[in-house]
Amino acid sequence: MTDFLAAHLSWLLSLHIMAFIAWMAAMFYLPRLYVYHCQTAPGSTESERFKVMERKLLRQIMTPAMIVTLLAGGAMASIPGVIDWSAGWWWTKLACVFGLFAFHGMCAKWRREFAEDRNTHPEKYYRIANEVPTILMAIIVIMIVVRPGF
Image: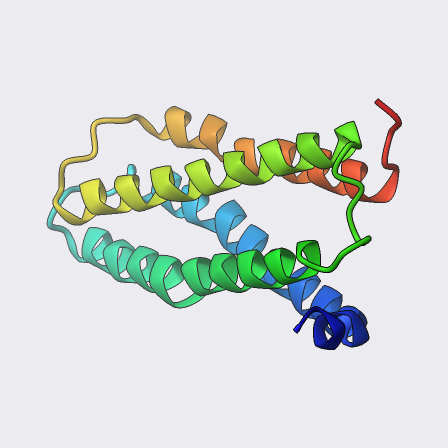
């Protein structure tokens, strides 16, 4: 199986990058929807519209993109010689990916709270939270492209 994966590494990498872009786009947009959702009255037509948008974004784009990112990345990591497991940049990147998983989980939790009209956070909270995936993504890209020697 690793021979097959190695022979198709470019395709795996392409799939991984496309899925990561889709995942990040959704992670940038969902907290922004929460900011706007905070500005609506619970039970209002606008609030109900945001609930539909948030559910569809999470379930139809964000989660599938995360899964494909994970599977393609895991497949590449399983190819012998692709990753230098002793390199510090790799572990830093991996820690940031786990941070993205945690943020994804928080977004899902917040969505459930909005869906049940139980949101307790002000819009400023989501404005600040919206910066988390940007920071993690920047570190991930730097680790992959620059591969600093530490």
